[in-house]
Length: 634
Image (cartoon, rainbow, N blue to C red; front, side, top):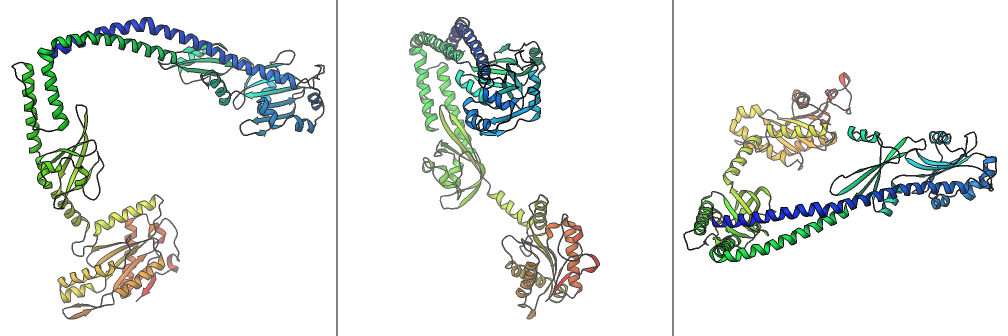
């Protein structure tokens, strides 16, 4: 075991033992007191919440006892009076008294007047019969004198107070009952929560938790169950009954454990103070060992830090002696030598940059490919050597690096974070993929381009057509014309002038028709003298116009062996091709139209209609025997 390890082990063990002892003392005698006191405080806060609920109930009783024994209410209950409503039951009355329900019933339980008032929107609506029946049933559970209060559940919990309608001197006989109510919902909970600085919410009495439900069965109305959810919160559930004494909901109370956190921080401060004292003791030990061990380690650490900070692999660690420290310094030097050899021998370009992207180290391969000296690269941002699109840090993509002479080198670029000590760096690796790119370009041209005309080939066209039909199936609806074209009498040209001149004709056809197309159109050679087009966002009139343009562009004769040849086409055209679901059906129907154009002698465009029934949506035209294909003769 080395001297440095022994020293570190002694200090670490001493700190661990002392810290553990201090933690046990603080947790057992200090933090426990904070926890007990906070739980007692929380129980008092929860009791204040229940007292607040009781205050709401008493407040409603007071309102009911003010309005029910009143001559005007008594008169209204005896005989309906609109003036009583307009003079007394304005929006301001409900807002000032914070009421949501005002209900007048006669002794038979018939509704004389009812209003549900939304204090947030100031909207009134009559009480539905279901809620009225709920209140009538509650009257049967009231006190003998007819006055009582409690909670019921309508669309949400509500506190109600009920009082018999009497004269102002409390004489009778009673003309019925006055019921006033206030929702005990989120807004009410928010008021209580803000006032008491405690979190409140309403929970159902049935929760999908067997353990919780078993505990709930043992809970009596208005009794509270306390829980310690975590080190951050305390929670309690109080079972709230309705007027009949049946559970209606759970009132959940939660409070952040502020006092616990305060005690926890206090314990931490005490522990830090204790550990600080232990640090002083360790300092004396370190001073004693400094001359023989630590000074040399410190000097070596500074040298390693300098190498790490500058990433200068030409620097070395020096030390004299024959102990572990000397061995460690030699090992570090050998490691630096190996790193430098590995970087210089790597086939890829390596760049080490600071956190701002400025180069601080590069390998030999990078200098060779970019044609720069190492000193010329240091200090420059790596993005300065990237092509047209600067690469963001940590991106992984293909890009290009620019050489000193301006040539671009395609590379596969990858960057990741690198930590050397406390310094944050970026390691970037660029692999020259010039050869691979050349192969990819050639393979793409071979796979998707016609070698004779340079136009897209069958595979490229079918892939594009498949994407368009797939998009239409998903509801994007891209309208297009589908056109198949054959050069008229092309076999005669081959037989008369030879296949080389036939190839020249095909190349000339590709050039002339290419100028008729827009950027989004697709023009491809399927094979032989057969061409195919997709004219996107075009209708039947556009197809007719295109056929005329083809005639116009092909009217100039092509001279072959001193013979002028005027080219013409037979064309099969399908309008609203987007209605097809099958590529096979599309080619079959268009081939029918093309065959018809050839049968008519060529130099003809035929619009297909007979296969419309195979599409997924209706098209214009007459179907079946009554319809012919639309023919354009040139």
